[in-house]
Image (tube, rainbow, N blue to C red; front, side, top):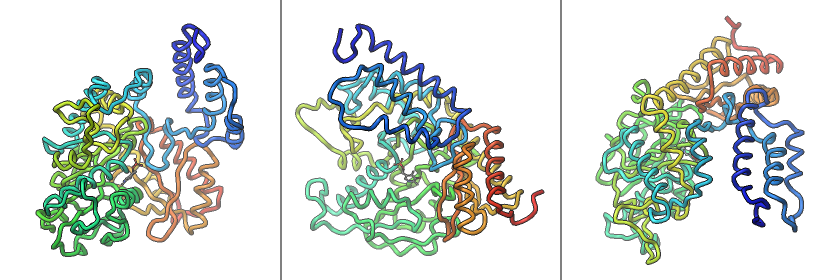
Length: 467
Ligand SMILES: *Cc1c(COP(=O)(O)O)cnc(C)c1O
């Protein structure tokens, strides 16, 4: 008898109950609207209320979560959610996460969890190979590409200042020699956030203009004569486009520059023979950030950072204390901004083990194939696809800004699929981000029908008669 569970074996039965409910949740996914109903949202109030004074038994707590929480989710685990580049969770990774929840390991150092660190480092080694990054590259799993950008740029800051005899970790930035930062006008907001946190300032950045697809224009790159961090992007969140990494690296004095690639979405093109060309020259960069919970379909949350110069990353993330039994090999806490952290490596390992190189390449190719199908079908119906569909992103406008917004609202209301909006080149557009392993050809066709139905209901006229 235990006050926390009320029954002798109820921890086991609770976990079994949770797993069964999770299974039922996933089975019901196909029959529900992607967005929660207003009724489901209203019922969330049952999960609010004043601070409970008395205990509630754990089985009831779980039942409340399932009864009121499950219907209020966004069905992003299904195959027809195309919002925000949110991936699904691969079955093996999801199952691994369920088991790892019971393990409840702290993956800060080996001494706290040999298995978590072993799986993380094995998975990172496999990923380095999958992504064709140089041997000896240091890496870590983090919460997402935002933290991956932060970790990489901290290593960059260390390296460029260390070369000038300045120890930024000890001395801070006051009085340090300046570092210049160059990004494209289309760099992701998280790059600015990382620069802000690192004291490099998000507004003292030189922003190079981009072309109509959002790619940095090499011809407008400024002359570089001082230590400079250059942030490039692989996979624009709207268009999916890639900065011309090879051309930029060629144009830069490499002894003065640290080239960082934010490949949250696009770095996974490296695993596909059909898409690798988009990344041309990326292996010459100094650091790379990517996401696990986008195209790779790891469960939330998971990103990865890779830094060519291991010593720069370790110096930037270094933390030592007598009580931390750190091993001779680098520990996760010396490679990432976090200390205590969940064991993301379990799911990362399970995903790569279950799919293998071939399965991951097929996953990427399928996401891109679905995106091309949306592109082709919408163009055929006379709608305006705003981008060259090179990866998983499709941008479509339905006429005026008002019309586009109206169609997006109608699609979200309809519930068969879910797409969000954006502004691209000064005009509203709908984003279709194909990012889930669970999306089937049938899901794409059903979603296309729903999109066309919503457009018709809004009285939007295609540019040309449908064929
Ligand atoms: C999504 C994204 C990020 C941020 O990733 P999080 O996982 O949300 O932290 C950074 N850069 C790009 C290009 C992205 O698409």
